[in-house]
Image (cartoon, rainbow, N blue to C red):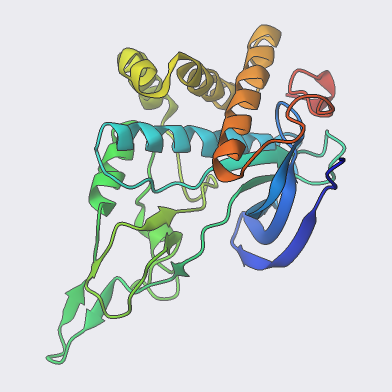
Length: 280
């Protein structure tokens, strides 16, 4: 039986200086490697970029993917225990048949905008301790990814309030917040990457990364880094390999998030990063 494509808009999920986010319930996920359809719907964030440059949606997907795979790696090494990055699911580009630069990731329910401090009865400020936050920031800093810049984790109108951190099990007036939280927003104004430092990490830790993530996931991480660093100007062979590895990753991610992939790789040839029309 043919499974119909479902995309149900829910509401706006927020907006910033670089993009706006829309919450959707959907079972179809376009992206590098093709269009996937699942037999269960998934609550999804669609991040639509204000920068309409061709390929921007795919670029943001790969940036999120790199951060997510490093998050997996740090968890497996027990730098911290709970994963703090949502899973990226797909992307669209003007140069495909989809009319916008955007990417898809799993929507995280929770509290966005909790206070970093409370004023106690004596008029003094009690600081909030967010479990695993320091360990998370330090782990990414060592690989050249800045995740804890004050201007991106505090509200610009009130520095006592958080932003870009979704707490999944928030309890008001709790000074010790538990580890069920996710960092969001990986736009260039929010999260910068020192590519020289990241390249050194991938080279120095290649064996450990292969053991923890598998060889193919390491290869995906490495080529995705080159795709971003060289602004898409990688060889046709590497583009083909990146498309193949990305398809594997997306299928695995969607299987984790939903019950079953219906049509993983049969009618999904509408997106090709090796296609010259994408102006990579």
